[in-house]
Image (tube, rainbow, N blue to C red):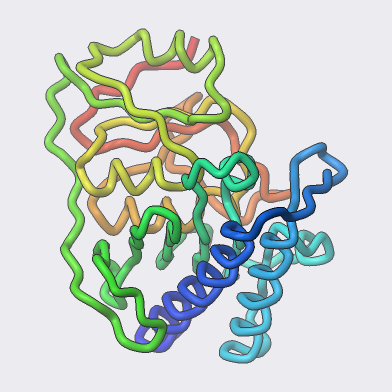
Length: 266
């Protein structure tokens, strides 16, 4: 994959999809239906998915594409693939809480090498540059012309006073018990893949996820965090989280700055 070509395309499509999502978000009403797994889906998910998928197929014909909203794409069996969650945090969207993102990533040999996470309601966009380093763009989010960026780098954590970020919609006792293993200075809640980006920007040290996620939920944020010097590991054995797994389902995982002294499961 030519990263010099890939990154501007992913960035542009994320911004264009974000604009379409915000049109629907600001409307008086929108329909919400349930998928087979009882998760919500809206017309915004579907519109953003069509825009991004069409754009990626046009730019990279023949490249494998996996997207949450197209079940037939889940049968893709490739080592290298594009992976998309057109609206991560649909519950946040439906409840008009703003913490939803557009996620687009490129996975190569099981590793998310490049990615973009755009939170249009928060005016925050994080992505990897062609060289793999991660930045946050501060606006004005013109699809064709990048604005000012600042480099991202994870914190140097104080293990006696950690900053932890956890899910806003999926917090449970198992997660609370795991967080309780650490000396925590403060807690933040955030939705969608923004949690990866808060670790990437140094605003948090640790993000544990002890619940079900899919690779399209995590790949873009994982790429950004890796580009900022962070790590994403399995909760059970602390091995790196891999991609291209059967069914694209993730195990429990931990995203953090490398200096965090990770605790074992159980």
